[in-house]
Length: 295
Ligand code: ADP
Image (cartoon, rainbow, N blue to C red; front, side):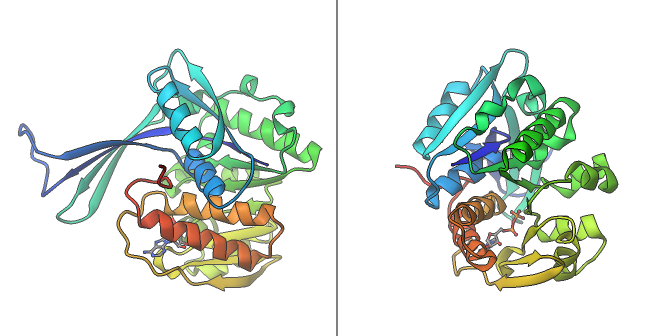
């Protein structure tokens, strides 16, 4: 099975037309959907055929039951720890339908309150792979939890992957510190921006090759241009994106992660894993929100 340790987020998406002016009642189409990079990746891994996908995360009391239900409907076995002192992480996305420009307001809420006490090596019983959401690295307590989980995985011989979250968060931490914290990670899954930012190399292929000297497998996503995988200092696979009518790119990277990891757990080659990632990524850009559709 796959264990994801990460973030559960309530996404409030407000689609409006034209610029927001102060002191007006701008009319918007507002929807609340379940999200979070870690939670989305878990859902897409299950959707991609991975058996026994589990998720460990903290949520506020406000939305714990709703998220639990949504995750179960997507085929994930959640262990959600309700937090009494913080709300569920919430992202307000303001989408201007006139320009497709998006503005995000993020409250990390309970995500950054994950702590080492939330971890137990027994959580790895029956687990073949551990995936960590990069958002955990950016606050003290949740970083300690992520490091404890990685340490247990190392002792148990369980592979570990990481999604580096975003360049904004990495800036806050510093690149050197980020790379030091990610020692022992087997699979790094950055998008092209993050890969270039981490290496200072503008070409994604160069960035992937360089990163693969620290990380055994590096899969870099390239949006509508697909993805590439590097191992041992070399790009070993380039995979085109699947044809799709793009509707909403939210969660494309998370879907790639889910599809990629589901394939890797089946023991596929880097190329086949990237193909599975791109299949899931294309499905994600074809739906509104970041999760696979449920019945
Ligand atoms: P992120 O959301 O992390 O920035 P990307 O935008 O690179 O990630 O997208 C992740 C994956 O989703 C890509 O590797 C690709 O397979 C798929 N994808 C993204 N955008 C498109 C698109 N317009 N058409 C088809 N597939 C896409």
